[in-house]
Length: 295
Image (cartoon, rainbow, N blue to C red):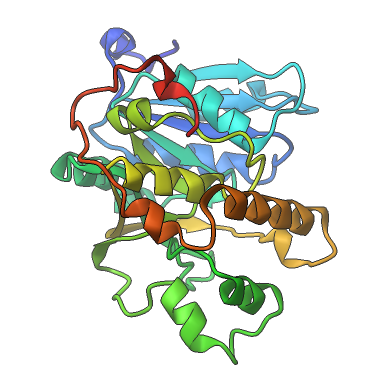
């Protein structure tokens, strides 16, 4: 593990937070993200887990942005959920922060430090997310209710103006965006996960190669008694692309397949599955050998 000069003692110390980033080809986005990580986590022991997902140009060019980095190189390109699991398997920190490459931080906000403090203050929280903005300052909702057919139609067909109540409920618009609340699921672009929680619940379900892997993980957390929480007291930025918005795109087809798998796994009433929740064993990992498999 590489360390900052004068901080070699941190190399033998467990990180407070491991930050996982998957790099495939997004070279125009990565410098802005990586250069803003360290300054946004003052006072924390952090480590970057950077996956080279069989990229064309490699990740060596990015290491100067985050001196304390663990590089994982894939011999072949893996799915998004499989890469997320590689990050969890490699992590050692109390928390693991999953980030898309199209994220960046305002260093003065200290978002990562505030999120770790939030998790410390809520020991029953298994997953947390923060307030997100587009680069132009528009709010990008990260906390969401479980999707329904009307929700998907409203988003895919651009019917937001006609289905405001549907989308308002989906995005929790009854809450002020700077408040904190428990939600159904959080966008996987920014997802801070507690180690004890994923050790109990298991890894991401690789059956969701892309899309709904974050929804599935959040539901499984709730079933195990861990809270899924939105923290509106801090923020970062998301340069959201929404590749699946084009109904004729490959991403749209992946989204449809993932939603079908979600329905086959949880049905049209996921709240019924959440109602079967158990009390979490806070601070204790599950003892079953299967705890690391996706439910």
